[in-house]
Image (cartoon, rainbow, N blue to C red; front, side, top):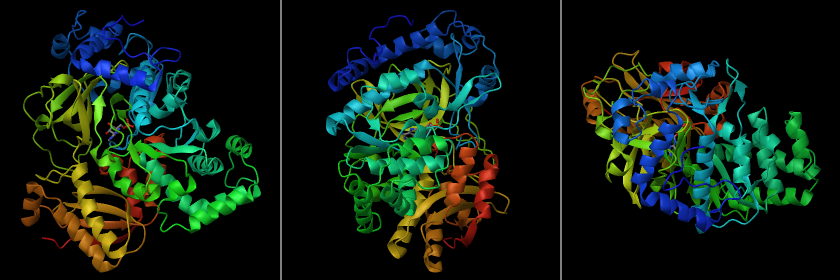
Length: 599
Ligand code: AMP
């Protein structure tokens, strides 16, 4: 048992007080009212619980647990520096390496930034944190948009779990959470019943899973209270698939027999138990779908009792919100919380805010948080050697504590958790927008790594997103077409090097419009380094490569093949040498290339 603390960690496990919506909100208000004290206590708990670990033993803390000693003795690290400790754990070393209690499960991060999934330690504390954040988030959401006891169309997918060399269970963090009995038991009180049986969530084949999620949603059409997924991408992807398969879904319902495309016996049997012949429902769905203009308002048409659409819509998910709004019609889009495989950070307590304005209140007892002021972040792309070196800052950055951050400033998040990560640089840049009680509210800005850089130019994921938004608005205005997905590449094999943007589009646009889009992309990168280099030909003309329809689906398949889950998938916004397989997929599917004439 962890030492008793004051103020206490919220205990939200079943049959404990504080389970009502108001109770959960009261608890949240209590722990955020003296965030500094809660942080000191949380750090003490983490260090006491793991004092015997090899990692902490070597650092000379000698039993001290105060923030100053912690900062003086424990170095800031990235995943690279602690990878060998995690590998030893995965290989079966059961000595206390990073934590007092041995780690028995490993999470795989989605790996879309670095090309391949990373191993991250996972334990029961992370499950409890997940429960705490879900309950807090649900309480605030439910206060604004109460949902009844109906069902939810939850577009979630467990990836395969496997055993590491040392016999530890490994899977994506979402899979580890969804599979955990501890999680299921704890969530019983608030979990709207998913309309799909578990066999669908844990199906061996994601395409079959998706088809059955949609089918189950239709079968329970009038009970669905909300539609959700972890990330907005999977909701857009699911309804994009619906556009292709809706007639087949209607057929299944009309006949009461599931399509031959479902070959996995586990899900075939589970869904067949729910599927009864219902020609009236099939006709009704047919009529609804036929009456829609470009699928606008699809979700409320199919699920008239749904109250909202829910999932992470910030950061790299922002580009998908446009399409999501089309499917959602008048239904509100509620953006979900901020976390990672390494741990949770903050909760969205203002569900009514539109996705672009969402902030996350840090929960001060789920980890110990520090923040590196943004100007000191070394802007070196993670694992991308395609670009020339930028100078590293001379001094070690000095992080500040959770309650020392300043509104209006940007910081990189540093996390210390209950699962063996100490002063771990998460690689995310956030902006403090204000405080809720004494805990900061953060807006997600970007991954720290640069997306594009050839020499002195620096362009981030956000810069790329804005450039694509500007250019795609030309496409939408002139041709009524949308960009389905995009990524980028810094091509230094040409002299001079140049930016390459890959676009998948919904249809074919005229040459002239495409040239305009290409020029617009080039002009939209406005940092002085880029503009100066373009003017002096230190960087060559930007190249827009259009890839054939379905190319980004192949990119998704590639990541799924490496153990990633659709629930956690984020399209990599830059492909470099670490991502050669993805780069190859993109290059193999190019149908048109345009070079900018903007300079
Ligand atoms: P992973 O651990 O691979 O699933 O990815 C975690 C990363 O996803 C975080 O470090 C963020 O970069 C991103 N992320 C998670 N939640 C959010 C959010 N609410 N808004 C924006 N980005 C997020």
